[in-house]
Image (cartoon, rainbow, N blue to C red):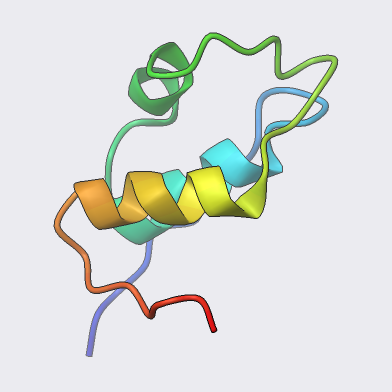
Length: 64
């Protein structure tokens, strides 16, 4: 069984960052720095989230 560590979002629109941190085990701040986005104002598309997770070596289901 995989234990997932809870990561709280630190920005108003940072739920995607928190999710990516929980899934990958990477640090929230590290992930934040990978994107040039003001997460206090806007979020990112789920396709960008999926691509980032895939790039970290996780299996990703192809979009149908």
